Image (cartoon, rainbow, N blue to C red; front, side, top):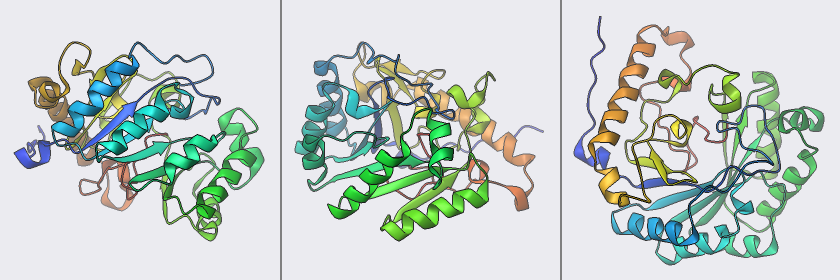
Length: 297
């Protein structure tokens, strides 16, 4: 039986959230990384002027929230000025960082109205967290989580249950005791290194990709979400204005493809064992702190 695909309304199609996927460079090599970022990654071909143009077009066409992500976005040489530009245009800005190193200039920007932080956390046990990241990163990440709390910077954390649900709950309790208000738990998503050599499968997405959100990558490619950036392109901002891509047929077709694949997955998913990745009513909004769909998985 063919699953019925309900197309979203015109209101749902209006893009209000945009991932600005700046770089594939990162100090870490996390085993679940959805885009295989690491120390050998590059910043892509997008120039500072390209990113400024994208941010300006985004603000003009109704985008209200952006998330700077990567890789490690703070390693991009223009990230700080780009975040400042987005804030100046009235956009809410979230910076998704591994929190291994945050400069004083970044701390100052993150205290501005409209700015916030997000991070991934793998275990309350340093050896387990470090085993996932491939570096002795736990102490630095935890110290900077505590600093963000002292500075009253809004912070949300995504816990990847790489060591099982019980350990994830322990990590959640630890962060909650530190004052982190928004904490989600997710499984490893089968993309990038997390796919372990498997071909990308759209049924592993949340099903709402492209509905009110899209991603722009380091080479200017636009995709329905950051999880699909390397295999579901719908245009490139270096050759086509962002508003034309967001309202174009390629994004609509990609959105329908994802919804169709996820609906088929739901048909075989017992309700009592359904996880957030295939729950039809679960909202996937990694930029607002309520999601079980974490873009750094």
